[in-house]
Image 1: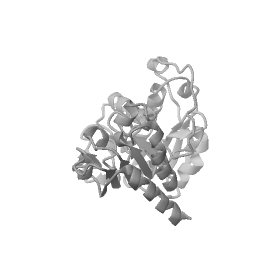
Image 2 (image 1 turned 180 degrees about the vertical axis):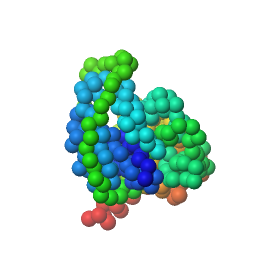
Image 3 (image 1 turned 120 degrees about the vertical axis):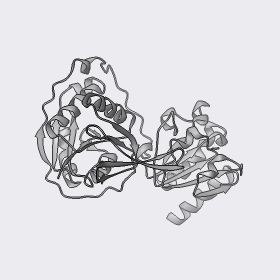
Image 4 (image 1 turned 90 degrees about the vertical axis):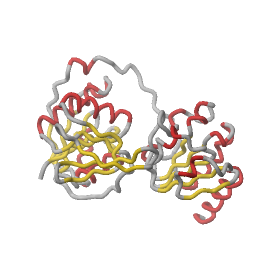
Length: 320
């Protein structure tokens, strides 16, 4: 069976959930070969093997921490040359899409971004995308070179499957561009105790209708009752009510949770572009004509300050 490269997203050896989803998808089209780079890369092998990786190519050079994405592109290009894979899968984070795009240019291949599914077709790997505010679903395949595909988090259920997980050292020759931009300092993100926005199974977002930073406590209370991440629309972020890192939308983060709850969000196309692939969408808005209601599975026409606290109370009661 053909091999499929999966680029591993990890933090000091702790593998992030989107990578495990990629391994699940990779098994549909071939044997997953994981590429793990940076500090702690060798520590990822156990988890990767438990989720089907037949090999784990490891490189722990200092360049991955000291410089930006180019060293990672160099590593993935070296892995591509060593394996000659049927496809390359990368998580659809901002960094992941940059790595994938640079790799596609280097190896002369086509690229598909923000896929929500991949499968083996008669003429190659087929990727599914949800486009135009979820109005259409497209199926595409790369016609030249090795398919390079970025996949949205939460596009697949993580499934365990035993793999050999043989660890092999990946020899990487760093390009001249690899050291072009140096990282001078890092500031750890302050933990909120909530799930990472792009990886969360449930996201609760607030928009212009929240009407102030102090009122986001209502959104946070609902999120905490559900064990959810908190999102915000561009209008709320631009007003300074919530951090930019929590913005959902075309100029923010793209999410695809099992459940998305939009409160006080009108549903402009910019916001819809970032959450349209959510499996179930619920909206609370006092404007019955709000565009968000064209997209939702369930809609509540009402004041969010009446509806959301009642919903939070009911959830907490049922949990208790």
